[in-house]
Length: 150
Image (cartoon, rainbow, N blue to C red; front, side, top):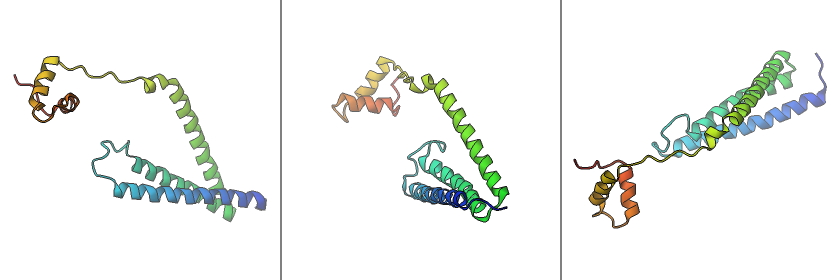
């Protein structure tokens, strides 16, 4: 099968640029994972270095399929590449619609936890020897390090 050379090399160059960008994303993700503190993030789903690594690896694989399919004129790889891009587009549209529908849940501010004033006063009194600053004492008490005496 003979393809148009302009389309072939345009697809190859664009896939190659995204391939290089995904390689850089993987490198930055590995660097961030190795250089950060061990307990900086509590949840694996919220860890930016893992998100960067995952997206970089997926993007690397997808663009490799596109590069190879465009350069070698392999219709099977080009069809796989097109279907993967279509699935990603559909997922992005679904995410945008869900983000719009549930935007009120995202913008709502969390309500602070109310603390019993007697418990707070006893906690502040316990930490008053450490600091005369009321804000520091309140911060220590809100961490829950000391329970109120019974």
